[in-house]
Length: 100
Image (tube, rainbow, N blue to C red; front, side, top):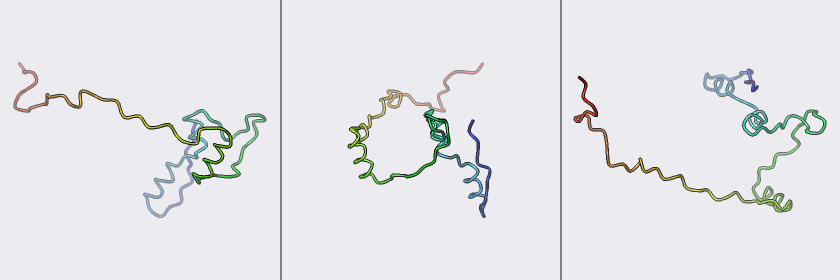
């Protein structure tokens, strides 16, 4: 179960609202992808982050070294919806059905 962080320290109501809706990223990943990044898979002990890599070139070098694809797959276009091009429209002067 995900728990909201209740610690609120802001001067404005907007800052308080933003902090009230904060969820730790480890819990979000666990909720969405079923990845438990808080506990060791071997001993179930607590894990702690020792590094965060944000530079694209470094990430690409690491993935290439591990023989993993360093580039995301191409985006596919959205599916075509023929209803978007329908030649009918609602006209308020022409009721769709008559009321008796």
